[in-house]
Image 1 (cartoon, rainbow, N blue to C red):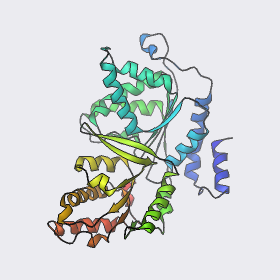
Image 2: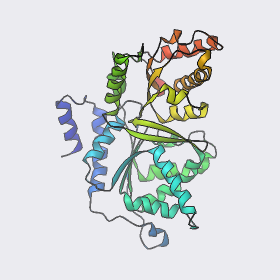
Image 3: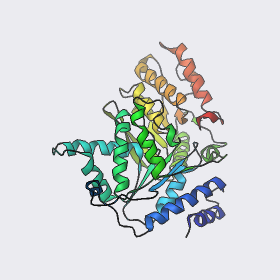
Length: 361
């Protein structure tokens, strides 16, 4: 059954809200589905030695658009239907972390070009790669992705990815960006780039009329956050590991751009601005459980919380939280109470129905 027909059936059941822009994107994905399911033999990395001809034509799709337009949902729709046993869906950050780990192991063997066996191993295991949230902010990733994806495309791997940015805006203003430009040109050449132009923010619609800040911390608050997490994650969850200056930051619950974490997992550990900025870049919504009252007795945790909120605010991340008190009375005694007024103001602004602001998308 065509993807669009399946979509309209789900609309008729009330499971989806009709959106013409999503239907248009499904037509693009239908073309890629045909490419994946066609009996075309997968090429080997040995094309580099002249033993195989490069694979011609499009090698996948790049769906981009604003937050909440349904990119992840469409990816789910496509991934669940396409008939290809060797398929994988993974967050782009997590995939790149795996690649770096595989390169480290390959170099131990003394191989001249470690990327070749790594790409070969990926292409041996996967014919269809689906990525959530392609974005590049790390210089080591920026220098690597061009050659990596050239090898994967030539080996016959098909790539479907979502992103909030047009390919030309990836790694924008990044260091040595000129060395990243060939990857952009590769994406434009090999992937069908399609903007999901929808006036509707479905994520915001799902939150319409829903509180975003629950106090006090009790069973009702927990149930509310459980309900929102189930809605945003679709009942699925996976872990995500972020690399920050050589360290790993674990997000145990992540799906469709939404993460769920406890206050003490984020602010009770020795994390800093770099960690919180990486988090704000990787997620579009954070569900944060159990923000306690803050004071001089937990001053370090309070300082980290201020830094976390600043990162989420600047990153235009939607915040859903349970807390021991309203923002203005979370931190009422101890050093830094005056500075916390800005944090309380930002927390209050982030509860508004118009958050994140339109320019964020």
